[in-house]
Image (tube, rainbow, N blue to C red; front, side):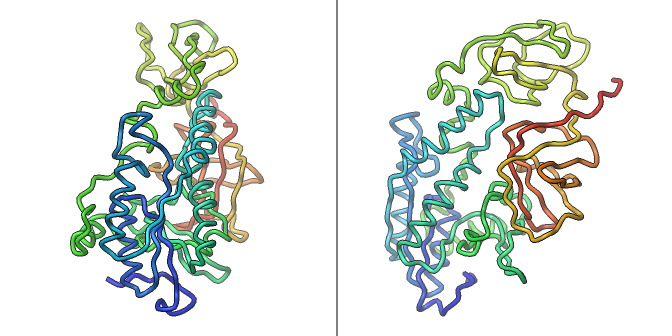
Length: 368
């Protein structure tokens, strides 16, 4: 397979920097770049000392992954550099993650990482190295358009990562390349086998890289010990139903872990009040959202405002919306919407932009 890196000059005269995490996806990107005939430089960012901090090595940009990236680079005969960005990652991603939980919000650290360390710092490194582009293993498509590069969903819906890239700017997109966007994951693994890459069977990470086993509470408590302070669980009318062991154990829409019995219907976390450390619960219909106000808006489209859909979670089905100023209005009530999440706007397969959800507007409660 010959990948199109959309270069402005012959590959034999070009230099490509590849972000190598040590996984199969970025390793295949490096191999495809090397096969193109361009000079290729692999770059790995050491973001977190997992072995020392949380006793886990097989996560993105940890020790084992750095070793795997270097091994792949050696096999391909390309240069490989490791840059220590642990402090920057801690400040811009981990601390923000913990602070968002402290505020009763639902953070998405992968977007913060792409927005900062990966697509700002790493992109700057690639430019300093004189590269024509920075290539990554994200499953998303960069499509040339009449007004510049466009960002589109991946061809494989099950692997699409466009939601996590909504904050990519037009300037960054002009420099970025995503050669796997048109491929399904099984084909990528087969390519890795054909190329003799040792990471061909390496499993994908299922967790946020610095959260072992999905235990968010343990990570937040480590960074912000005060997050484990106890408080009350109350219903929509303010009646105390029970107690909790810290806001870090709850997110909006959660049902499990409330440990409240004797209720006529299942209860869900409707909102979190960080000041009094209260968890407010109610029936599922109380989670219905009509609109959401966004901040930190990033827009990649021109003037498109018609036929828009929005995703409020990476795996959610796009919902028809109307975009008005800094707010989105859902055609039908949407569930599982929480401050701190991202609302990402699409027109068909094209990602137009998005922002961070700051406030939500509840739909009118309907009879049970």
